[in-house]
Length: 138
Image (tube, rainbow, N blue to C red):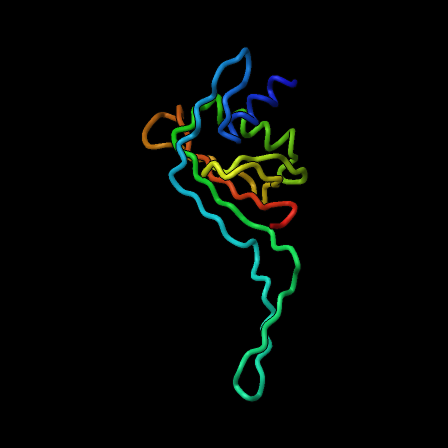
């Protein structure tokens, strides 16, 4: 089981590793976004016309959207099994490396992963879209 976890974590984090020392290639990231998970500002309009604002939270989680392209069917199945069995569709957190190389974050999925066929490859390669949210805030 440990080698399976190492394989999926290597794929999700873009680090080499995996079964029998193989290297899982970094997925091709064609879309990436980083934003606050929610608007933390409370706005209170006043009769004089101005708006008073204050922060609702002291720690604001970040939300990341990633689009991987041309993922093989084998890697797609590894990701799906990771989502289903290891992190229970977002109930458990995991360590994830930012695609920009900015370090590791503790995140959880905030929606199910979406798999769609890539171009016209007869279901041999897949696009993978997922959204994660930081667990600790920033």
